[in-house]
Length: 157
Image (cartoon, rainbow, N blue to C red; front, side, top):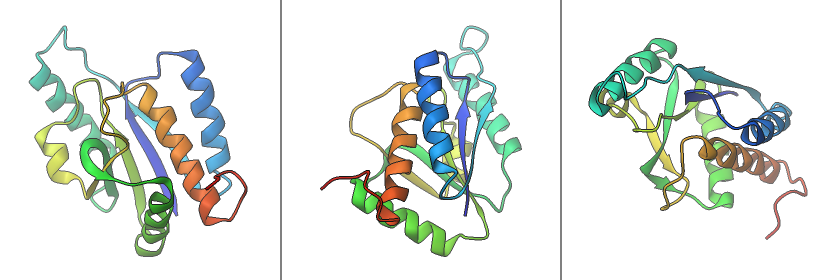
């Protein structure tokens, strides 16, 4: 299974980048994994709607129509860690020949075009997190999901 975490903008804080790097390396033990960045647009040059549209165009240019796109979005389906690991297993079985892309948008979210293109949406919490910190939170959960699937002693019930 090939998984990409696609993120709008660079990670601004070194402590988050350190954690992202650590969990990214851990995840590569379980699948072909990579992180990719899309250039963030600034709302100073454009209004919020224009910013989302411009970022959406960049996102669409960077993915293939064959890719399975999952948005990390507050409107998505929520999972606990065990259910998320089961979802990962299902993705692995169903889309083993496709690239699975988890997408974290920019500060203002996604354009309508991205919502239309998405194959699924996942919510990590009912709370709102910055698009910077959710990167680390998601990667920890992705790693946790793989350790659960592989019966490794990371997750405790």
